[in-house]
Length: 331
Image (cartoon, rainbow, N blue to C red; front, side, top):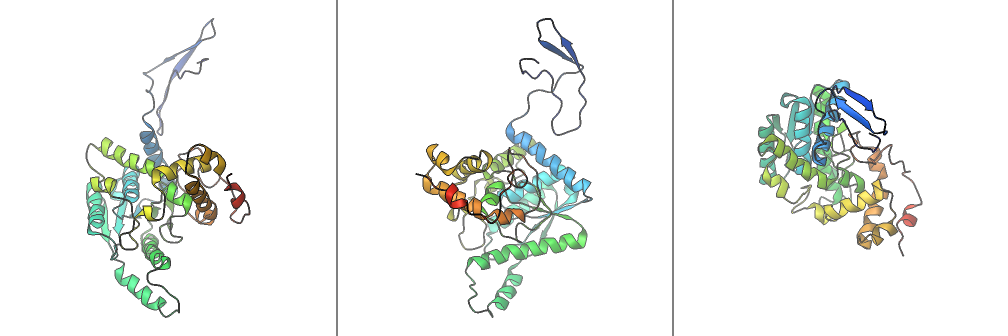
C-alpha cells in the first residue's frame, strides 16, 4: 500500500495465481482484498535459498535438454547438499551419485556418501581412483622434478575424478553437477579441470556457512536425517593428503564469509573491513586470494544466483590487473 506494507503475496519460486481487488480510499490509503488468503510472510532465508536452488536446477536441466544429472559424492557437506537439491529438483530416479575414493579418503566419509545416496534413493556408483592415480604418478615420475607429495599430486586426484565424471556424462548424456560453494570459489580453493569440471554449479553462489544451514533445513523439511549427522559435524576436508582439513589452508569459514560478504558483495575496501573489527592480516590475505583467482572463476560452470552480487556478470573484474596491491593496503 502507500505506506510500503505488503498487502498480498503470491507464492515464491513457483507458479501461482493471486487475484486482489485494489480499493482506493479518500485518505490515500490503498486497501487490498485478495480473492483468497494471501500467502504469509516468506519462510526463513535458508528455505527461500533452498527453493531458489531447486527451481534453478530444475529449470536449467530441463530447459537445456538434460533428463538426468550426475555428481561426485565425497561424503562431505557440499556434495550432500547438492545431491539433495538435485533430487528435489529432478526426482531421485534422475540423479546418479558417484564416489571415487583414494587412499586418503576415510572409511567414514565413504560410508557417509553411501548412506546419503541410500537416504535419497538415488543410484550409487563406486569407482576407486587409486589404481589410476598410481599409473599417472608412475608416468609423471619420468619427468625430473615431479613431486608425488606436492600440490600438483593433490590436484591430480581431483582432475582424475573430473575426467571420470565427464566421461560418464559424455557416454550417457547426463549433466554433471559441480559441488563447490561461493567461499571456496572466491578464494580459489578448487582444482581447475578437477572439481570445477561440470555443466552446472548448483551452490556456486552459496557461502559455506549457508551450506550448513541448508543441510539442517533439508533434514528439517524431510522429517528425518537425510544428510547424515556426521557430515554436519565433521571438519571439512578435501581429503587429498593425510589428515588434511580446510582450516589448514583457509581461515575459519565464519570469518572468511564475513570478509567475502564485505569485499565481494558490499564493495568494501580492506581499510573499511579492518575498521569494522576484522583482523588485518586475514583481510589482506583473503583479498589477495580473491583477486588472484579471477581466472579460475572465469572457467567455472554457471549456477544459481542467490546473493546480491554473484561472480560473473555481477562482478566484472579483469584477470590481469595492477590494482590488487593498492586495494589491499591499509594504514
